[in-house]
Amino acid sequence: MPNNTQFEHLIGVSNPDHNIEGDFSIENKRVIISESTNALTFAGISIINPCIFKQANLPKAPFDIWNYVLKDLIIQNKVTGEKADKLWIDVGSPERLSLAINADKEEVAYAIANITIFGIIAMFIYPFLAHYLFNGDELSIGLFLGTSIHETAQVAGAGLIYSEQYNSQITMDIATVTKLVRNISMIVVIPLISFLYLKKNIDKKNNKPSILSMFPIFIIGFIVMGLLRSVGDYGIQSSDQAFGIFLNDQWQLTIHYIKSIAEYSLAIAMAAVGLSTNLISLRSLGIRPFYVGFSAALSLSLIHI
Image (tube, rainbow, N blue to C red; front, side, top):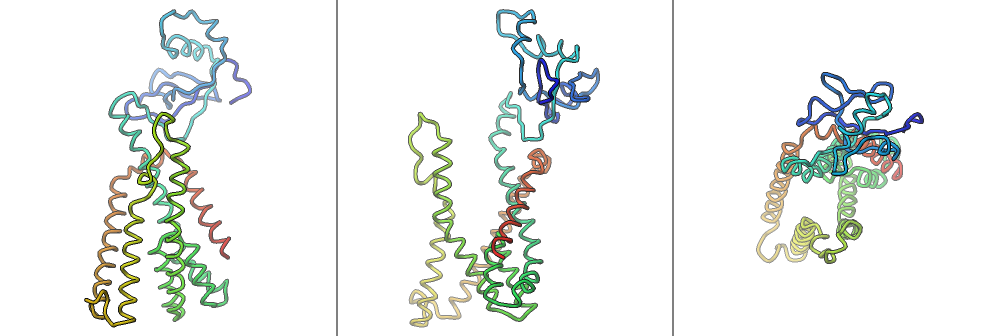
């Protein structure tokens, strides 16, 4: 807040679709009202000196502070202001309330975009960087790729690039197994974070959060498929049959089909996220989450180096 603020300091946001003409603009940190279009919409957030209510001739009934108090002070050039770049939604109608309810989807899309962008960059750069940093040591390179890249498919891609460039299949195997071990930790980490979040945000009048609400359903699928693959592979090694039904060739073909379905399903899921993402809304979240994603990706890499 400017030091020369004596009466009130307003927070404005970019004009939403339902108020394209805006409420005010800012010049030299002072709030002004233009006769034509204004640059900002009043967010309903302000810092007020109580003296303004003593000076104004206010009705006893509920009143509109904008029209009864603020406009006169703005005309007198006594109000300062600033623009906020955070996500802001006016919930004055059922339609805009639904936007607020779905706002977290934009944050999820932003997080996925961060993971995808930085993961793709790492997938193409890290194999060569790791080879240089670790002098071709396959174990160190595999551990580095498996721990410093976020997404499983990107880890596998980085491992494949390394194995093709430097003829080292074992590096890809080490990287993939390392990433899968990280994935298994989600069984503990995600429910724990969910519990802490719900414990902090739950309404005190409500009951305690259920275990189901804290446990991500996709983890069950991850565990089930992992067990099926492990038991099937063990059957092939011990008796040349998976589950007493599939021969080795049949089992490998089944795994191939399941992997193909998983890849297509992942592509469809990512496309669905993209189709439901409003880039303009992402812009309203600001550039800071992008910086956080970059810092996290860089920090993760430096730690594992």
